[in-house]
Image 1 (cartoon, helix red, strand yellow):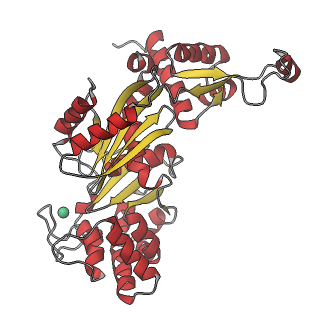
Image 2 (image 1 turned 180 degrees about the vertical axis):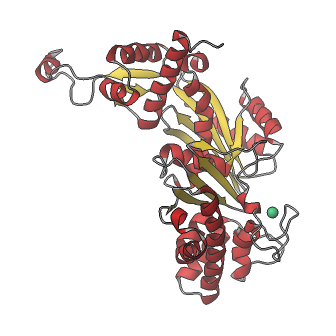
Image 3 (image 1 turned 180 degrees about the horizontal axis):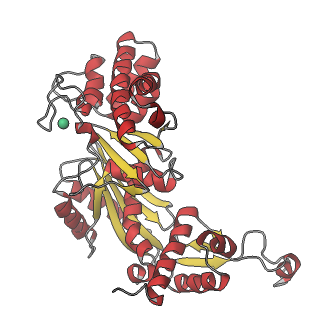
Length: 391
Ligand SMILES: [Zn+2]
């Protein structure tokens, strides 16, 4: 029979919980931490002291309570003793985050607390590792001497068996001992919006990401649905039209053949048939043309909006989400075709599931997968701050 958690295990869990609070919510007073963590004041004081000693947080007097006219302690006496504010050491503790998109690579240095300290972008080329290495070198130059990197995470366009070698290769170019954590862009978009964006209050979230293909990140019961091998959420390959077009995956009539970039461009007459000339700019051009009154572009937006709603109706019936978020190029398609999306959901989704669902665009914008990659990198530190943060 296993005994309950030891004192030391409880202490480590509490350290992680406290650090997570200031990481997600920013500077918090000891009083706020006491009430949100349900721990007593002396425990909060001891935990904060440990995290301060490890260089992960610092404590300071709240703004406006500093003594005036050089008389130390005067303001304190007048107002009663204010609760010290606990702040993450954002400049000192950071992670690298990468978003390896279909067209661009974005790299960022993200401080504890989620602040983007530095950000670089490059057109994605064949040799993505040397692009990443170059951007990291540029970002390393101004880093303070006492700052340290606790890990790195990367968002990729596909979850497949290449993740492990990619994580190891990225770690090698970064000179890190730990492999870089990798996940697909939709899973990380979901994680970011659930952690810091438009779905922080939701337990059940679906984040859809469109670019060349379509991917989904699904959060159920507050946790990312990964599936047995980590490949869950490939909603782009949900078959919606058995008589439809062949898909790159080898199947036919997958959802992404009806709502992906090429589907929109084809419907608008922009597709040259060779698969080239697509991308975000081309999607924006169709949406802009529709807004200016171009009849063919408007018809294309309505057509793709209808198919978008069709798949979302299925997902709403299966997962009963509180929030569905449209990211990547699906953001623009959703905004332009929202009437078709809603109408299709109203016709095809069950009343009980659809009446409460919120349809949203990412609060974190295009950076959602990048910010999710940083959160992935911080997970180890937040799970066990003193072990992971020992530098
Ligand atoms: Zn497919």
